[in-house]
Amino acid sequence: PAEYGVGFDVEETGKRETSLGYDCREVVITVVVRRKGMKLEEGGGAVTTMDEWLGPKIAALAENEAFEARYAKKMALAAGLDVKAMASAFAANPALAEAMKRFRDKHVDLSGSPVRTALTLESVPDPRQTAEARQEQERTPTSVGGLLGKLAGGKKAPPGARTKVMTTTTELVSVADAASTADVSIPDGFTRLNP
Image (cartoon, rainbow, N blue to C red; front, side, top):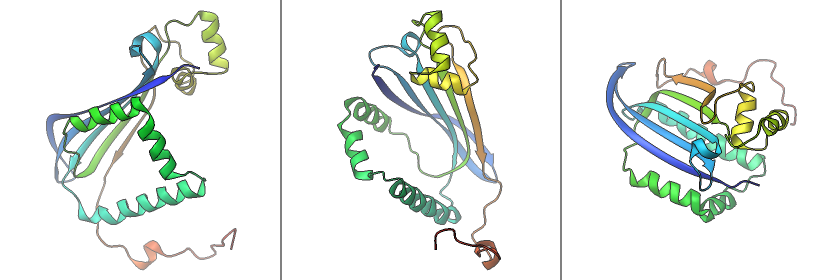
């Protein structure tokens, strides 16, 4: 099976704008998954771009962030994932460790609260595949680019071209630091399936 490398890049663009009354700065994070030893255009892969507009640290969001961290930890445990083993495996992979080192070396300040985030996932087909192999991969994808291309609807793209698989945008609409008891109470008629 093909081996893949992961590359990270982070850039503070210098752009600023006001969103929801907060002074925000733009930070773009890019993650590239490609075949080891090859450029993305040569061997295919995937690109994830996260365009974040960071405002100041919003205290009212701290409780929500803490809840999401606890939820993610519980879900990992419920799924039988060993977080320590995953961290060890991540640290033992030289490509991931090198990518994370390059990421940290950028010294970009990621502090603050995301006020708006646009996430884009793109696939890049392997141009070395024959037409027959591409048809087979469309039926049963075996590579990252092939799987993402399948998710994008199997659109044909010229060699080295990126196919947009998905774009999502998340934006704060309002922030409040209080919730009523009714906002967080268990609804009438709620029944637990596994008491």
